[in-house]
Length: 220
Image 1 (cartoon, helix red, strand yellow):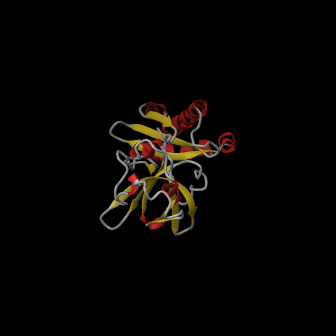
Image 2 (cartoon, rainbow, N blue to C red; image 1 turned 45 degrees about the horizontal axis):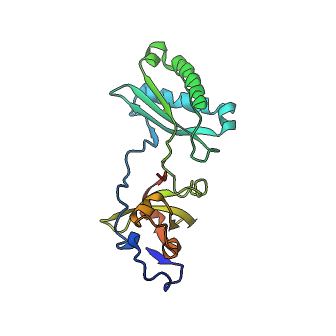
Image 3 (cartoon, one colour; image 1 turned 90 degrees about the vertical axis):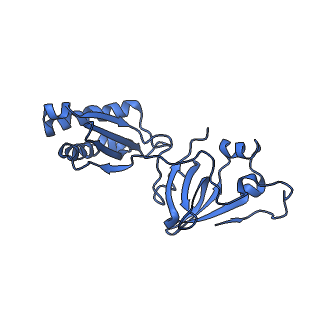
C-alpha cells in the first residue's frame, strides 16, 4: 500500500507516530452527505428547475465566469430546492455571493415562467457553493486541485477502509500515488512536530477502484 522513497536509515531513532498501524484512520475524520450530483426526487417542479438552471448557466455571462452546476437536490417534504454552483477558475470552486445572487434572480424569473407564479412561490430556493471541503471527482479533477491537501477514503481490503490527508503526486487511469500532507492535524498527531523526512518521503499507491471518496481538506 505504501513505500518509502527516502533513506531507510535516516531518523530511525524517531518513532513514526502516524504510521504505527497503516490501518489506523486519522482521528475525527469522516465523511458526511456531500450533496453532490442531481436528485430531483421524481418531482415535476424539480425536473423543470433543473432545466431552467441549466439554461441560466448556459448563458454567456456565466459561461465566461466558469460557473457551472455542481449539485441540484429536491427535498419534497419541505418543498425545498438546493442548488450548488461550481466556479471553475476559483481555487476552491466557490462563486462569490454576488454571482450566486445573480444566478438566483435569473433562475427565479425563468422558473416562475416555467411552472407558474404560484408553484414557483411555494418552492424554497437555496443557492450555495460546494463548500471549502468539497468533493473531488477522481481522477478528472485531480489536476485542478493538485495544490490543495485532500482527504481520501479508500479500501484496504474487503472489510476495512482508511482515511488519510494526502497531497496527490501522480495518477493515471488506474492508479493514484499520494504523499502525506504536512497539515496541522498531522502535527497534532505527531506531538506537535512537523513531518520527518521519512514521513514526507512515504508514497501511498491507491488504485482508483479502491477509492470511495475524495474531498478537499481545509487545514485548521
